[in-house]
Amino acid sequence: MQDILVIGYSTRNIVCSARRAGYNVYSIDAFTDHDLVECAVASRVFDSGETVDVKSISREKITELIDSFGVDFDAIVLGSGFEMMDMTDLPCPILNNSPSVMQEVSDKERFAKKLASMGMPHPQTYRLSDIGSVSYPVMVKPKCAGGGTFNRIAEDVGGLNSYLDEISSTGVGMDADLGISVDDMLIQEFVSGVPVSVSVISTKQTAVAVAVNEQMIGVPWLTGLPFAYCGNITPYETPYAEKLCEMAEELIQKLGLVGSNGVDFILTDAGPVVIEVNARFQGSMDSVESATGINLFDAHVKAFAGELSQELKTRPVAKHFAARAVVYAKDRVVIDEQAMNELHKESVMDIPNIGYLADVNEPVTSVLCTEKTRGDVMMNIKKSVCNIRDIID
Image 1: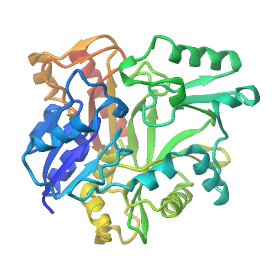
Image 2: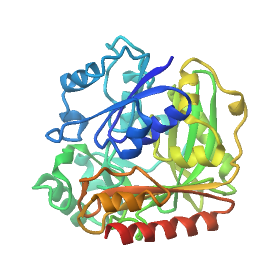
Image 3: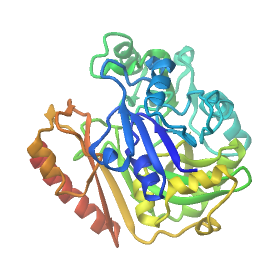
């Protein structure tokens, strides 16, 4: 297996991991970042006229883009935003969880019942028709994806209705191109604590937790959005690490997931609470690979062949700390040649191309640092972010 196609909203981390593992990798995504182009044999971008909502991108358009490479691919990998798409009719293997399994994971009611049957804590989830019986505060968020951009806390019924009205009206305060509607939203009991995730590699027989990650959510020096995903720090050191790994491994096995998958938790004073499962490559991919030295793409491919590499026979131990931070625009940003040249001097990834435009609170680039301690890695991340702010602001 050599020629791999990756399709997703943003595929740079998957594409570059595949390249490091020795695959000939091709990409279709919404950005075609500069560093993605350097790693891919060839890449295609969704036309600017298309929305980034997978529901609005036609299957015919994707097939047309696939055919444009003129390559008989050995496999296709679907990344964030496209993991629910049924492409099983294509002539090559799809290295993702099956549509039927994905449907079970995405059905929040079934998922909640599964967790209850396993004795795993999970926030109460409400239907829109349950507004009259909701216990506040609640988290309002998209059922799928979104990166935390649209997540809001509602303290009472007035706040809840106000935000739902905002979504159903003209899209004020959000990107209407994303196609978010009230029907796409989920109302969930708000749980206070530390957001963490566990990265897992699994075959049909075995699941191994690769790393426990601290999630950076709504970090003020990275974004102006209260719950936007801002990156990860790997590993997250906690007395609950063993428990988190055990819960993630058990849940991934029970759901029948294969390959690279992740489980999001809130670590409360009483212990871990499961929030959701990401049945695809996760945003923590860069920090996990940097901290552990494990190539997650290669591990993903082998897992679909029923194999676990020798380094995953037991849970790996992080060799050092690694952090990836996503930098969001404070004001409207247009990347010119000088800005791109200056960005190359920093430890940046997801490098935007000349002419890239980011509106307020849209991602511009990301930073990856590796150090011996968490304190050192965060100090260097903040230093790099300050330099980037000087370049783009």
